[in-house]
Structure formats: C-alpha cells, structure tokens
Amino acid sequence: MDLALYDPEHGYYARAGQRSGRAGDFFTSVDVGPLFGELLAVQLAEMWRLLNAGAPPSPFDLVEAGAGNGRLSGDILRVARLRDPEFYDAVRLHLVEASAAARAAQPATLADVAERVASSSAVLPASFEGALVANELLDALPVHQVVMREDGLREVYVAAVSQTVSQTVSEPVSETVCDTVCDTGLQLVEGPPSTPALAEYLERAGVRLEPGWRVEVNLRAIEWIRDAARRLTRGFIILVDYGHEARELYSPSHASGTLTTFTRHHSDGPETAAPAWLRDPGGHDITAHVDFTSVRAAAEAEGLTTVGFLDQTYFVLGLLPFLPDPQSAIRNPQSKTLLMPGGLGSTHKVLILGKGVGAPALRSLSFKVRAT
Image (cartoon, rainbow, N blue to C red; front, side):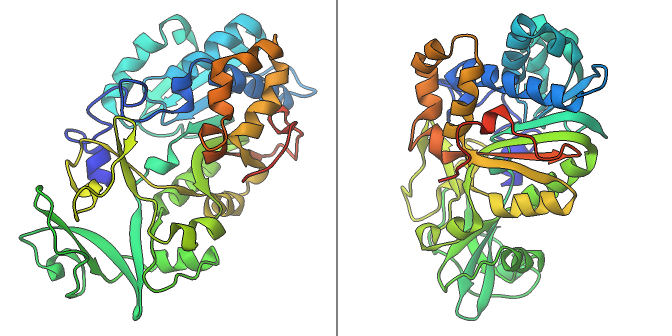
C-alpha cells in the first residue's frame, strides 16, 4: 500500500498534483466548492482569538497536512482576506504534502494568497502554535491487514507469485489466502504478524476478533498523531475523515474489513477472485476507514484533550449561522452535499483536539456534538 500510493516514481499520489474532483477518482468536501473552506475559516479565526485572549495578537500557524495542491488552504485564506483581514494577516501557512507533483502545483493554486505561505514540505513543521487541519489524510495511510484464525492472529501479506510464503514473512507458513493470482503476478498470503504491536493495538482498543474476521490496523495513523501532538506547542488539531469508533469498526458489520480502492468515483468491487488492490498498483486510490477511538487515545496519551467528536453534518450546522448570510448558505447546493446523511455529512467525522486551550465551547460544536 505504501509503494502503490507513495512511491516517488510509480505511486498513485506521487504521479499527479490532484486526484480528487469530478475528473478524478473520488470526491472530498473540498471538491464540493469553497464553502467548506469558508466554514473552516470561521472556526480557525475563533481558535486564533481564543489563543490570543487577553494578549496582543500573535502569529497563527495554520498547518494543512495532506495539503495536495493547496486548494483547501486557498479557500480558507481567500475568505479570511475578504471578511477577517486581521486574522488573515496573522496566518503563517505551512503546507505538508508527500507528493512532489502536488507541492509543485501549490504556487499556482495559491497565487493571490501566496504571501501567507511560510513553508511547503513533506513533513510537519518542527514546532507550531495555532491549528493543524487534516482532511481525509489518515484513511490514506498504509495499513496492516490481519485475520483471526482458530489458532490465533495472522497477518495478510502481498507476495510475488515466484516467492514462497517463507520468503515473504519471517517464519515459514503454508496457508495462502486465495489461489487466484491477479495479472500483476501478485498474490495474498497469510503469515505470523510482522510486529506484536498489531495484537497490542487491538487489545488496547478492547477488540476481540472472532475466527474469520478480517480487519485493518493503522499503526501509521497512531504514529502520525503522536508526532503531530509533540510538535504542537499550543493550539488545536482538526481531523476530518471517514471512519468509526473501534467498537463499530471491529464488529460483525465490518468483519470483512474496509480496505478498498476507488476509480472514477466508484469503489472497485471484486471483479475477480483477486482483491482489487492487487490490480494495477499505483493506478488507483487505496483506503481504509479510520479507527477514531485509537487515534483519540494516542493523542490524549501525548497530552492533548478531546474538544469534540461529531459528524460533519453537525460540524457544518454549527458554523453556518456565523456566515454573513446563513440562509443563503443553507440554500447553497454545496451545503446540502456537505450535510447529506449517508453521504459526506454522516460518513465523515470531525475530531477536534486541543493542547493548552482548556475546554472551549467552539462555534463548530454549537449545534450538536454527536457521532452516528
């Protein structure tokens, strides 16, 4: 998954500056239009003022992780420049993006607001005070897939047909997951877990897998949020992604796992016995739902507090009244798409974390704090 998505030469994200949108393979809240950025600008400006309460205005580090070509940051900055110049002038924008092609496209995307860009890099700033925003980042981090068998937990590996199973994993095993090999010459095999961290992760989350259940474990997401928490000196982290609490993600309703691929806005089904993610490596998105329970626990272990966890629907409804013309905004087709139950509104969750900020009653939490 890491190679298929992020290999500098052949990776899906590395080979293009933008993958989402009508001409892409999937649709995000940013692709709906500038309204999502407009709503975030309201929330971020409030966060900046909370950080400056009782003190002279200070710079505000706005870090966008998984920034792509910078469209979301551009939407945020343009509306801030128009409606809240004081906040706009305080912003120091840090774009974090693994794809060199996407980073190369950022200057053109942000041309008229480029004065606020402080850095563009593949890694988070060493330290920052302000807010970090990550929209649909964690679901695209490489995952481990495991399956529970009668004799215990096994990990699923990708192997070349010419390899024996013992060449793929550290201990000899004989069981293969499927006999059908895809046209890339890859197959899935089962072996001992590559790290004890997989079983430890499930135990911490209170998960008990039944024999036959196949699930994903995103160790990279835990590493990422721990690293982000350590780099944040004071401020907020806003994570927007699709996923569930652990009790739902690791349950009978998801006992086949959530790992899937997207091409031309359709989830790739099992056209053959070989899993879709083995076909055309680097040619499509690969994604898995986020375990918000474990992400939140890892953040709190690093000193962050959970300010709110809610459906995107309620996040948007909390912010709409603070726009200049709320009624027009509500009638805007973009609002309907962002709010739609069963669509972006309920499948996407918003996790807001804080450090050194107490428990503020944020505008985005003013309607209802509920995650379905």
